[in-house]
Image 1 (tube, rainbow, N blue to C red):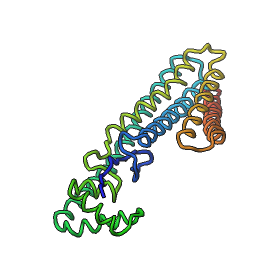
Image 2 (cartoon, rainbow, N blue to C red; image 1 turned 180 degrees about the vertical axis):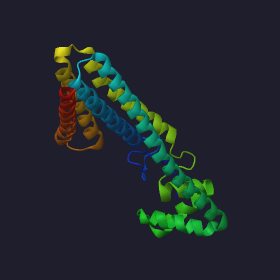
Image 3 (spheres, one colour; image 1 turned 90 degrees about the vertical axis):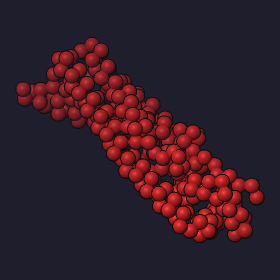
Image 4 (spheres, rainbow, N blue to C red; image 1 turned 90 degrees about the horizontal axis):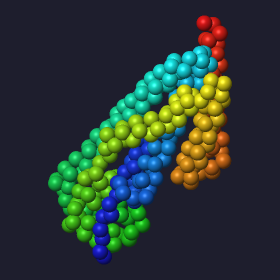
Length: 248
């Protein structure tokens, strides 16, 4: 039986890597990264919209609103990037530890490692004879990679990259945050708050639709949830800002 190890990899979304046939360049991996980018953009939209709408409730001064929005954008983008970097660095350390352990086991007991690999293949539906034949062929080519891919769903030559995750989060949050920031500062004063709110709700509808489509979920409920959260955020922050504006 001719057997090869396909290029399996990871796709960080909620701090976990894939364990199936999603290589770094595969469709599944790209969709996971895209979905994470959509969610990052959504965070940027809601966070900065809440800030600028709240400040607009307290003051009509365009400069104050702009400065507050920019500060929220910068703080949020760096916070997202830092959180992703820390989370994915921990994931990478775990992956590296698994690979190192597997390397030691292969060096200490290569025959036992073949049996272990065959057992993993049997769990995936292969017969005992076929599993052992495949395990031997895979181990002849690249035993470490064979074990890492089949047992852990990761490629020892392509572990999760925390810098990629950090930069992706930074950019997606920033792109999302720019929409409410530009809307609230460029629109005329009389239409500023309502115009920004409408732009934000429309953008959230789009991100909800995209996220649901990528995840194979029902689009209507996903859009309503995300639009509801965004609308509630803007209403609450506007009321808080208005209360402080009156008090001042």
